[in-house]
Image (cartoon, rainbow, N blue to C red; front, side, top):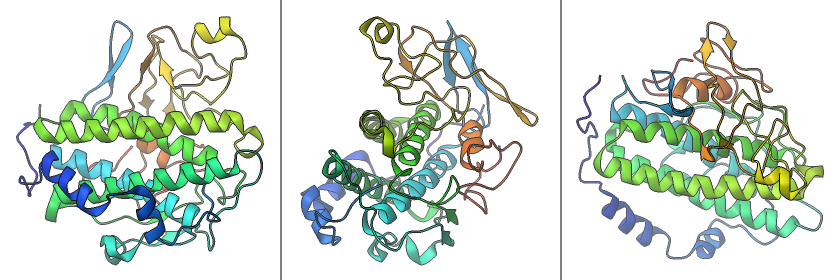
Length: 327
């Protein structure tokens, strides 16, 4: 098993320091959004080991990955999320003031203007996506601060991996990215210690808030967030089961409000085939974990076609940066 010694080159960057940085940088979310030029009219939208089970509860471990590697893997996800929401809400890339764009890979599949939503919930969708962007950009800043000079640069990103981003599919893509983030962060914590685990746990909490909000608003707006086919055997599509009795039994093969898990079958990647049956859920009522490999299998896929033994593709046409890069 890999050592769990701290490998971060900037050990002084504790959670307390990050909290102070966050407070100094952004005393007010609305002021942040205003500073970026977002107006009310601006609209928005493996780990090296596999999964094991204990009492039918999937637990992903971080064996074989050092803490720097884990944090950099998560930074890849935050780069993707922050870049996606930046284009959706502003029609432009992340601000150069973050220091990210100077070392960025090529960004394709972009938008030239913010997405504009219509309908009953249009203003709520716009506000939600702007606030998620605020969080994701600060996750990038926080992880880069912790890693210091060990932080990876932003890899090349293809935002149109699952199709050109439009007001029709943006919520579905956002939902998928947040669900992947939550499940990958759940795995990552197993390989972290001390303040690193504390900080990543706090980001996991924020990602979970995002996922829940996006799933609900997707259910409320089916015409602009049509349920995509299940991404893999663990995916739970946003879906209102329709009755108290069904809802009380938890998600089904049709989906559910939350991506909770309870089935005995835990999907894994064997050769070129991703095994597992969509909709195999039970009554444990827990959030599940994806290994780094399982997360990459989705991120390297195109149009929900899962990658197998790949080092690039999908959202990351040249692969992710760091040491955890292969499905």
